[in-house]
Image (cartoon, rainbow, N blue to C red):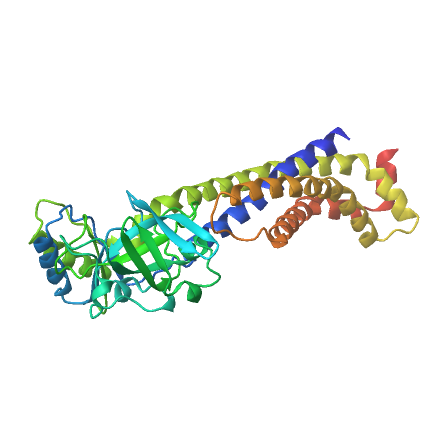
Length: 391
């Protein structure tokens, strides 16, 4: 009983780690491929310009747009892995009363839609031909109406039933009114563990009003990524030689958010291999002990007519009993641990029973292979030899 209990304990730990490894691996894969609200391929993002000089911003915009291979360029004040986020309260007066929500603000330039390619769910995109789309000019009366675009989270924050329902509604901030002209899908620039915040987009044509430290983003075509990055960095240095330039894919900026969980997955994989190896050693020792103890018993069974397949089934069933008990213990423990871990993510996979079935099946197969040698040796023993050995 003690030997069986030790084997069951070892396999419980091993199966639990295997299940956790499978879940962690699938979650990290899911996060890597999940839709972030923008198209990641053929997109390079630079660093903040660290200037509010509108003339310099316009020259940088035109210089980067003229680089061979660039198909579109955009400025924004947010970027993948944002270091600072400005949130402001905007109010909406609904038939049921006033609703106020804190919205993350991002001012964007022409070319943003072509560069990041967000999905428009309702309404329209900004257009330079519409004067109210642009941000208020310096010295212009604040008591006016400007057009804005919200994301899905902002639509829900104000209680609208659908993106289309939000179109035409007016938000208030101080004396300025903001009419909603469009709704886009949520764009994730932050950690996958955090909820995408409600967001409001305003528009600047770079004519009279610039950006607060804009971040350039470039979409390119028919050029290797490394070559494109070098061209952009070289163009950047012609205007901002004092600031190191580093145009990189959006995935590289988001890498710190995913690297930790991937390292955790690798550690769990090594732990699962070590735990299974130790458990198999214990099971092999149990099988060797049983082989010596049941040698005479097998001889008697074969003398009474038991066939080799019947003996194999009997022994395998006895050897697998502690393994199956271990699986019954490991599954609820792994479920609780992984449910708690997945709850930390805003987007996550379902805790599918397939992960548990794979872990159990793998443990059973490994256990059978571990004891197969001892089982076959016992099943093929000659009855007369076994009875003589006991005597």
